[in-house]
Amino acid sequence: MKIFIKITIVVIIIAAMVKMPYSYYQFMRIVVCSLFIWLAYLEYQAKSMKTVALYSILAILFNPIDKIYFKKPIWVIIDELTIAILLILLIIDILPLLKKRKTPF
Figure (spheres, rainbow, N blue to C red):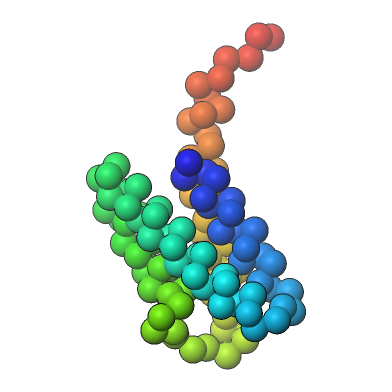
């Protein structure tokens, strides 16, 4: 489940890096914030407090209610860093699954 959520967030943020109507960014904030809260909850259940803190900070950063305003170039950097972090965490999640699989050769 965590892998699917992370991939969804990455896709939504990548789409936001292209010029979109403002309504897309509102949609993005709602969805991405909600998904980061969900990830934080899943990590809390797994007792991984470092990633709970990371996802909580990202949820606050992308929250749609009390928006944090940055200029476009700063948001691009934040988006790129968020994507990079999520891709690293995706690799960390996927590697154990690949090691479990036994290849027939």
